[in-house]
Image (cartoon, rainbow, N blue to C red; front, top):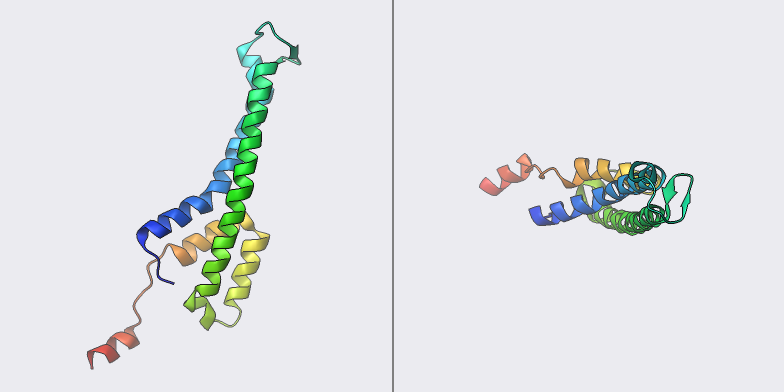
Length: 136
């Protein structure tokens, strides 16, 4: 399957989006638990050193990052599986497609990154046998 440079960039962004959203999810929890300690009391409801504004801001951030991670991860997985089924190089191998689909499904985040760097990003090398026959 021949992809343009812009398509590869789009797939790369979609591949790394769940990982970046997970990092944002973790950061939002640090905002919830440690943000109130750094800001101090704002005169409002406060429990265990975390103000209500800081808590709800962190909770909203965590929720948004979680939803983005779920949907972008699902979209990336579907896109990778479609690419696997259309990849001519993998069709020539006996179990290449099945192996990559299992990697994508069971190791979704890191499996998608590995598939991106091994199968999508590299430029296809021209077949020397085809080039010799074209010159005849």
